[in-house]
Amino acid sequence: MQPTSQTTLFVLPKIFYPTPNLFADQIWRAAQSLRAFILVAAVSVMGIVPSNGAAALELGLTPSHVYSTWTNINAALIAVARTMSDDPTWRKQIVDMKVQRFSGKNPGDVFAKVDAFRDTFHKGRSDGPSLQGWEDHGTNKEVTPSMVFLNSGLALGGVVSWLVDQSSRQQLVSQFFTRHGFTKKIPSDVFGLVDLAYRRLELILTK
Image (cartoon, rainbow, N blue to C red; front, side):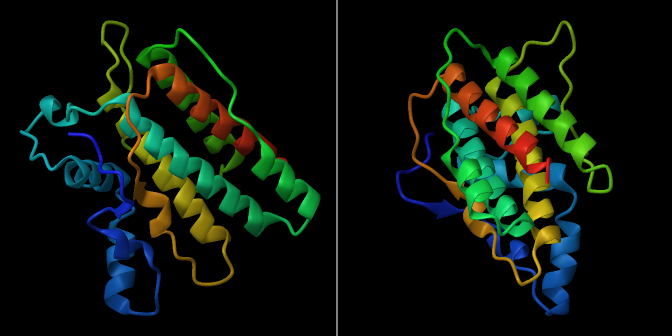
């Protein structure tokens, strides 16, 4: 099932509204188990109840779903940049970065690029949250869009947590969990968005 064309929030958006309310704060802390949250979010997007075990990770996801996640990650990175500097020229440089076109990419290529993003995120955020629950790619394991989606969702959670940490005021972030209506995307399209996020991240980490 493809996402609808209308903007839809995940079933648990309010956990990303940090407030003085104790109950909301407790839910926010519980949501730091990002692997569990992303699996729940994926189920809510697809309307699927997965079985137990490894099959739970194969939810029929496509490159279009992964493309949506990296659209959200890029938007979140722009928001992070705005919290880190008041320099309008530097901010504009982040915003104006463009997607580069790639061809011939497969899910394994995208998986490797997502791994590179994670590694750079960890190096630049040594004091920040670790992206736990990462799905590794074994040498004899075929990469599927579902595997890429899971790791991409963990990356999104890490960037959003970074944004909340950086913000000096209450930060509403459910917009970064928007379900878009993208269709017919291919791995090369996704690779371009991951590459864009990677370049944005590198520039942000220079601050």
